[in-house]
Length: 546
Image (cartoon, rainbow, N blue to C red):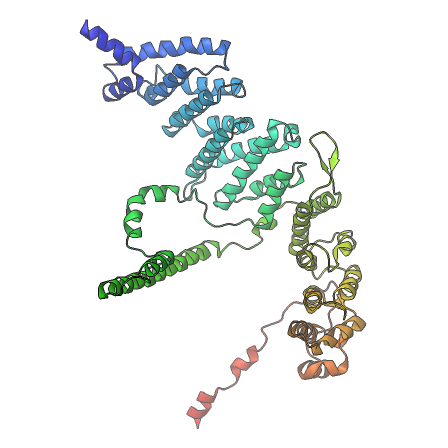
């Protein structure tokens, strides 16, 4: 009677049975098969009413996930049953029961009982659920699984291709264009996965970049802003996800080292406590010891920061700053579509109408358009007249607007298209009734444009601008002098004869090799300037010869 009672207790206590099965699988096979039959009967009951909680059923699923690898023939197809269950009912399942199913699948995936190609598409589909905790769990697992599949120099190209195609279908789906549909949430989280994998240098190919580029035209503001911010700032510092395992492993050592460190607040607190008490030698020694410990701590922190900066520079030294922009397939079409989207000033609302997009979002889009124009040397005729309305001193974020306007200029930009904006900057910013800060900002903007296209400034405007080099404000004076020096180097013919300077005048008289700048003409360097000086004898060789 005692044996039967113990056997019944073992069957009811799943953690104990799990422990016994892991120790001796063959002896407890009958007990396992009994639980397996219980699972099959519970599964048929679950299909009738999937929205209930099923607490006992979730414990049984977790138990089978732990021990299924010990009975591969009996549990054949168990992961597929759970995945099919999720695919059919993931939107109506109880949140706790749905989370337990996901954890069971993750457990079997970690034991290599099911492939990533089978699991990850289901997890991407489950981003549609209105469950923030579940989406965070899926997001963290997807990142770690793809990262482990592409560890080292060996890339899992088959998995990457399947997942990228599936994400492309999610982002391009009609549901992703509707703000109220669950497909918009799935598209946003899928883009977050793409961006994070690019930052971790796992998916850094052109296909990933162009999948993210699709999101820049989404009618949903969150998706649009996420994609534009990625192109403006594709690299970032180490995320907290990378250091989680290290912090868990070294928590004990950190607690011991922190006890031997002294922060500035602790030192000030110690000095304040002893400020109004009796001065003794022991207290003085304690403060001196704390001061030495504080200096030592600050030196160690500075060394650690320097090492981290050097490591980050070594990692990023081979990557160009605009590498993401170079991977876009059709930059001209992309820039034109993005510019038309930013100038339309409208966005779809939840009720189906049209709402005006926020100024910050439109400014980000214009910044990306100008960066594409400057990097790929594109020309969008309507961009420059459109910027004319924002070139006012009282305009919000006017310094950012001046910077993005200058970054859109290159050597193939027609000077006739730029001259109206430069004249507007000169009239609105560089005037006697403006403050010195406004004048210096206008002069620096004109110099930034002229450094990219020297033919954009005519002689009359330039002669007026360089007169500000005698201004009483130092900022205005230096801005005017830098503009004058720029034209002495690049285009001295346009300057008045008395403003050219000695070096520029000698070059013009001696018919220098540097010709007058012409629009659209590229100058190819022939040799290296000053290489003939290497053949001249040095002073040391002359002394030795004498």
